[in-house]
View: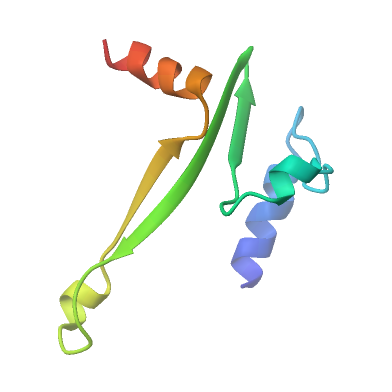
Length: 86
């Protein structure tokens, strides 16, 4: 995982990137999912993700396919995505 650590170091060195050690509220720590929070130019998006794996142990081609889905965590995020599609 040295490549991942190097990428994280480069990303955290960018300007306007806050530290990953920001404290979470007690409400956030009780959720069954880990939210992803993006902020840029006054836009704030809160998402959570699921990853689907296809296939069976006997099918190597399908076993390697992963599909990641992002879902809005709140109404403002859902509204932002709805407005982008229009």
